[in-house]
Image 1: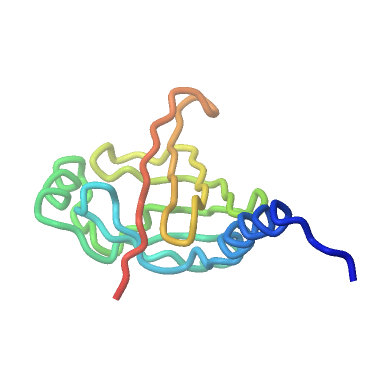
Image 2: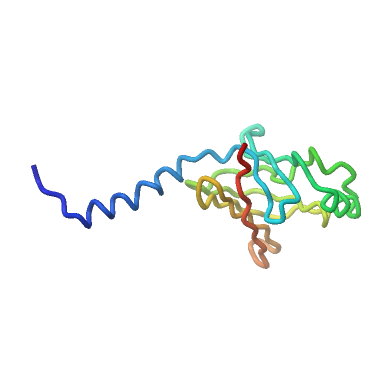
Length: 135
């Protein structure tokens, strides 16, 4: 039996977590960076979507100022389709702006999503890191 070199074993160990990350489901509850909104992601027809499950008073008031009277239940993540392992493209609805923007989601690991919204077909983008809500 061939003897494995220690550096090969170490390199293989580094690759294992990446394989596990790619297999982590995106479905679940995700919290925005401010802790003011929780979105539940799941299937909607043949796409991935996300609906507001909970919002604090400040987020609710900001949305109301933009004409969104019922923030809880609103679809923030709309019509995302897979663009490869851990990547999706669709639209993000920004309640305090009252508009949807072209968007991508990149699953950074099992508990973090990078959600980007862009103007002008990918120009002028803003991103946030959302974390999985546990428990």
